[in-house]
Amino acid sequence: MPSMRAAIFVEPGRIVLGEKPIPDVGPLDALLRITTTTICGTDVHILKGEYPVAKGLTIGHEPVGIIEKLGSAVQGYREGQRVIAGAITPSGHSAACLCGCGSQDGGFNASGFKAMGGWRFGNTIDGCQAEYVLVPDAMTNLCPVPEELTDEQVLMCPDIMSTGFSGAESGGIRIGDTVAVFAQGPIGLCATAGAKLAGATTVIGVDSIPGRLEMARRCGADLTVNYKEVDPVEEILRLTDGRGVDVAIEALGTQSTFGAALRVLRPGGTLSSLGVYSTDLTIPLGAFAAGLGDHKIVTTLCPGGKERMRRLMNVIQSGRVDLKPMVTHRFKLDEIEAAYELFSHQRDGVLKVAITP
Image (cartoon, rainbow, N blue to C red; front, side):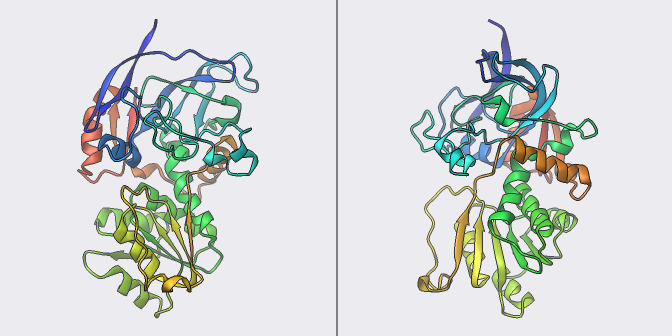
């Protein structure tokens, strides 16, 4: 049986490069030959054992590649076509999809842990940090890449861009809004860009790393706050003349950033949560106005499917957003363990890494 190289979860603390069989293709599937992929912060949660998956699983959920083989029932695509697939792969016909929430088309993973909605790659099925990946429900999930766009230009679409933009969309940002984005990692940077595109006229980016604050300004932040130099809650309230922000986007997944995002909201404001939390959250009583502040707390899992991918690539093609500078490091698949070591320790100013088989 033909084999391929793949990044395999062995146990907490160990993701290694190994050999696995190239997947067989079912009627509705497509086999994608990976040309570029990347490592996500969620993959680091898996590496650390903070999000349990089955041992032996191939990790990764952000594929750019070329169709190697199509299932017998797949129509509208051709082998050799360059495509992406979202990190979230809805079937298109589940109860969640028919209710208009395809991102929640999921169940339980092999460890018995409730899966994050429709996130299957590297969670409930083998992912794409490999030479090949099997894409389920290909007609719902594969989206052709425009010829003029490079792999690195569209690399953020499957997850990071879709997630960040959805934070702005779920927050209901309106023209003229003031928005604070807590944490300017890859998802926070995309949330900053999405907030600006959605019509916010004042976007405040919060982080402590100068390089990330500079990138935030490039992505659309009007103001930046270094939380190691000032108290971010006090500073944001000062910047808004005590009013608070209309929308606060939490893009890190910690108790402190969640609490701070809630504290800077105006009465009736919205906290849009994108972080992946590893422990239980506590809602601060005062910040929550004892439940009487008309606040909204919304959570979002990145939308997937081919239409979502098409729209995101349209934004890139239009020139309104350029996320390619977020790719700060490049590795071959053979170097995946070194890539994880760099990314998980956030060394050398890393934002995103490009992995090419």
